[in-house]
Image 1: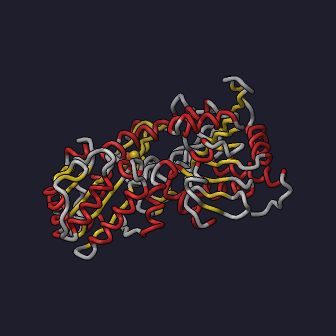
Image 2 (image 1 turned 90 degrees about the horizontal axis):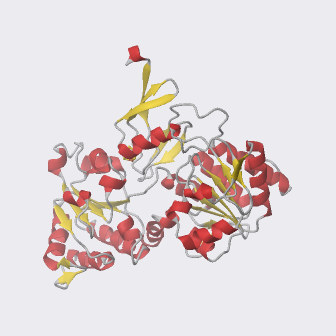
Image 3 (image 1 turned 60 degrees about the horizontal axis):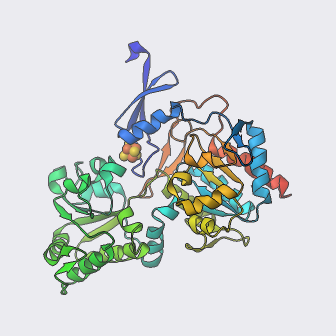
Length: 444
Ligand code: SF4
């Protein structure tokens, strides 16, 4: 490739999903990404989106009551954002999952100074898992332990082939580990899902649960594990299959339960996870068993980590009383928006315009709003101030946390567009100006 003037950057970290692959190669022609190697189709698209036409190239302000945007300078956008936030009584800061821990840290301080609420995408994702872990604990491990030891993999309510495409090849089913030398042949794969997904098609055992009946099936599995009797059919699953799964799990050396939106976002929500964790804990009486939530964005886990270190709570953190408070259901973004309890909002590295219910976005469209994002999205379309930024993991380095809480440093591969600021820098400038407007000392 040298003769063509191309360069390959190795050990690049993919800033898309919670698998946080760190073996990607990016092929560059000068400052242009030509191709990627090892990344899945989604990761490849994310890298290439750095030079896509839907990049926001300049800060924008929406004219009052219209859908017209006017280009403005960074100084002007920062000033306007600071004014909105300094004036607000209870602003919401939402997003955080697709930016660096360094930016998250500054953002949480901004929320505190503004006496606002800071909340990440866990609120619509694995927030219920966090609530369950806070109730009953979390027997967890890292993905390296899975690769080297696990001989039973259960994917419950998740579809990694589509959502975490390299999860199975890097950690769970296919790799040859230290104690799993035969790779695929050393492992049994169980998939629980109402739909026969592409992941389910790979399974040794496919359990077709009725939609919304996971709690019942987990409860029956727990009961069967104890050797007690269960009904003939539970949640559409025959007794024989539940008993078979309970008995099979006991014969394995190291079992792993991976779970996703099929249990966190269906009826029962955090209680589904509560009973799943309780079953995993029970299983440790017979063998070794562990669980890992299939965290979505590449750094949603990092946002929870940073919030916890700074103020003690992993999401939905409310500073309106001057000290951190946490009460999901009350201080979560959708609850605040739907009840009209916030009077300004800033969205950072996230797209609630596409992914929140309309009932929430109706309030967002009525209040002064700021969006900080490298790309045009349904959220930027309804925000008052749009501030573009460089892409972490492509044009900016920064820390991210994998789904199993392992920190990995994302690399900078190319330079961002000329004059483009990072999320961290934009947040620092807004924070400094808000402190001035509120007459607070400038120091950290
Ligand atoms: S599996 Fe996830 S982290 Fe890995 S390359 Fe694909 S999108 Fe990126």
